[in-house]
Image (cartoon, rainbow, N blue to C red; front, side, top):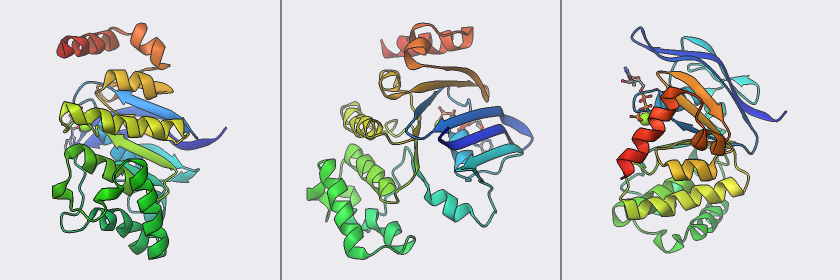
Length: 247
Ligand SMILES: Nc1ncnc2c1ncn2[C@@H]1O[C@H](COP(=O)(O)OP(=O)(O)OP(=O)(O)O)[C@@H](O)[C@H]1O
Ligand SMILES: [Mg+2]
């Protein structure tokens, strides 16, 4: 089996309070796993544990059979294989779009500048932003900045991409353009773990849905099954509250 990312009995606490409990998850190459669940259930914390941004109190996270452990020497190397896109795009304000997306490949991965720029321009063209290469982040809309942030992650050639509510801070009309980029990446066969509150998108993009509540995996199912026949009262309640919000 082509497992890229595995968590075994992952246990995470903040100041003695359990936030994630016995999380066992396997993500295979090319798979898109979508995590949904109520606010505060531990979704962001889980993604942060996956790329070693958080220490964990028990269990293991493995990337390509290597243990990810904050403080370990291999962490930088391991983290290069994981691309992460957050709700706040965190582009450098005083650098152009082209500089923003080529900085880490050139400085961290020591790639050739001309080669990195060429790839960046091709990726920017794919998302319709080649004309913005010399612009600064403040000159872009939120949706455009978020697409640039995705390009920045792709420039590192990660084996797996993690997305944490990347459309949550966007105006509704910009949500779609960002989700379409992620859908296109899924079609390309990229391996992704996505946290989102966009349920229609979750259903469309996911190979598998993970429903997290109270720091535990409560349900794990194919998207159609999860959205049409949730197995637990908690999942039903979650989905109902969601459709209510939308009205
Ligand atoms: N740095 C921290 N210190 C202490 N507690 C924290 C910290 N970060 C998160 N928590 C707590 O951990 C729990 C999980 O938080 P997390 O941010 O992972 O939730 P979430 O599922 O991403 O929520 P949301 O949907 O609102 O983004 C919450 O109870 C939160 O208060
Ligand atoms: Mg969160």
